[in-house]
Length: 213
Ligand SMILES: Nc1ncnc2c1ncn2[C@@H]1O[C@H](COP(=O)(O)OP(=O)(O)OP(=O)(O)O)[C@@H](O)[C@H]1O
Ligand SMILES: [Mg+2]
Image (cartoon, rainbow, N blue to C red; front, top):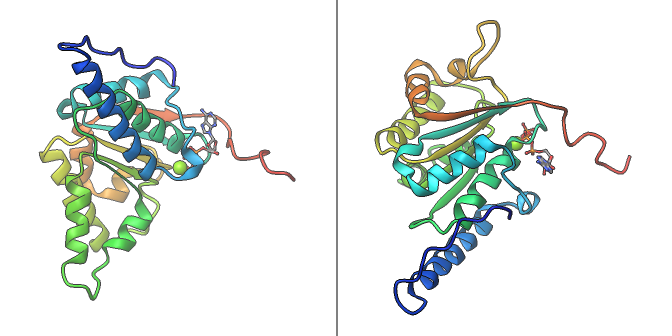
């Protein structure tokens, strides 16, 4: 990765440097576990994405959320995994990560016959240090999805936990569907305060023309 974080000076014989590389190794292993094969080469190339990642590593409580919006194939998921890689490669003090597709998340949170399983999963997603919520706003809304979204976002809002969200929906659009329509006013209000980096992605669908045909 380009532009790596500078190594701290050693306080003892190799001490700080050793601890830094141990943190990098630990975080990188966690990043690899959470990242699907297609995005193993992801790189945060946009300056605002890189800046948010650096803030999320050095001052996680102030980073809030980064929201990447745009049409399909513009590179939102790529930038998001790239941002998380940048955080890991910088050797954060702590690094726990859950990356989840929103539709899969609602699927895994549906009340099941295993008592408490969905509550435990919601707790895990709410409390994890770094959460990446991919493809937010694609599922059909219902009272149940609104309640789940509210509980998740409200917890992360209250506890100032860094969160990355991608969506095909714009943050706001007076003439068409936007994220507020999906999440409802109370979540939208929290997101408005949480989002410190709003990154609208533009361009063509990068997937088109890549195949053999
Ligand atoms: N900066 C980049 N450099 C190289 N490849 C990229 C870059 N950005 C995206 N890609 C590739 O382009 C394809 C589409 O990117 P990605 O999946 O991130 O789009 P997306 O905006 O998340 O789309 P969707 O809304 O459909 O989920 C992927 O194969 C991804 O690896
Ligand atoms: Mg995507």
